[in-house]
Image (tube, rainbow over all chains, first blue to last red):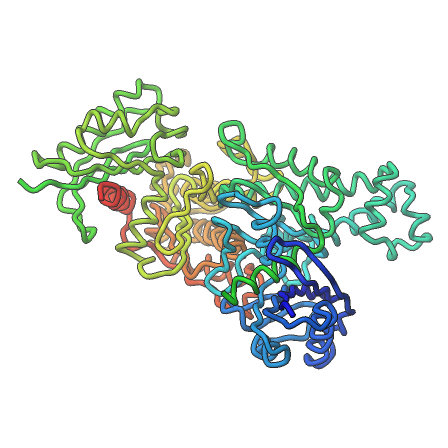
Length: 316
Length: 316
């Protein structure tokens, strides 16, 4: 029986595994709930292994790639720290190799998403690109000649914690004024809640008059319906996306910027205000090539596809 | 007679040329005044050629490298724009090759300084490093495996125009809140002037009661004498240096950060507050390796040395 390469994306809420072929096509998937952060690590590894085996459906495993929402060391052996996962430096790659009986590759989820977009998506053929993933927070990766820049300690691409406002909004990282406090899924929801307090919105009905229940997808749906509060929340988050992206472009001058993550499903509603802010904020915008700001093509499966790609490369 | 490789650093006020040997040692130099911005470009090229020929002192030119304070295209052929030089996209490299009769290489001055520090200075042996040059403004470069990251359009490293304060101080670039408005030679002088208005300082005497005459070297000298106004100006500029550096480290995770440019002559008076701010601002500082922040070793000649290095490489 022909063997398969499986990619896994593991975040704070779910584990998504899939068989990915050499062209980046997904032939089968399996989903599990992440057991949470306050469990023994082996429970998370159980869920991960179950999802992998279900996706493989009895076919031999050639290699497994894991995209984790956390800090992965530069050797790709451990998750050093993850806000929503229990791992704290255990030799995860070796543990999974022993459990699954095949080579395992491990990287940060945004790095995996970037790798997938470079090989099969929006950044294909670009000499350099930035990947900015807008989920709960902001993740990111720097692509040079199709390769992810890992950094000296595997921590490159933490764009979300660049400070954009001195003494600004407090951040879960312990800092304040971090970019992701102004431009992310959480920021979208927070902005919408604040605006709802000032004027009527269909969000009021959607959340059954409890603003704490507002979610990102609700804001997206409300904006689609023409709700002004939701549209203004997107305009704000999009504007900050452009401002922070201008900073990264000033430093790195990439050919292209790819926006991924859940919030990017809103497409031009997010990207149009970002493009406007980018042109306003980028140094010398009138005298230079301003990189395109585009949505990722692989959507929420980019991390899984990129993890499979990494695994396939690692086994060569 | 043995031929020589000459490096030239051309800024808004002076042209410094020097013969640089393969070990980065400078064997002779020549200095000219930059004719200014409002002259025909050939006058600047005259001054440049004169300085080169004086430094060479009759020896044949093997190659000449030019470090220019401006935006250089990715092919290294033109200065696209420079705030203090008249060039605006002329084919400068070809013009100089025709005039000097030898191969000419051209790059941005901070890129050249980074190259020099990578080969002969503080960044030698580092797998990755950031170079931050604090002069009138902030210049910069990203070093990966000893090579300068040029960017898709040759414009990588414009760290000084990353926005650190929304609606902040207006910048010469047309933007506002740019990092170099808070951390640079100009920022040092501006901060000292503002503090002088509030309390006594030896700067008052140094500038003959005319704050407009305060210069960066005056502030450095006053700080050496123990002047509190001058020391607080350094503390402010150093703090902002650390904040902005933390942003770059979050994005790029380099092994090392090298601070060059005129302001870096103040050494730990600048770097100590920067290191403190870096540890305070950098995401996950308690759980990661925080890169060293060190002064460049080649001082004000780094641009010239790096230009010669580029020329020597180009002729191979």
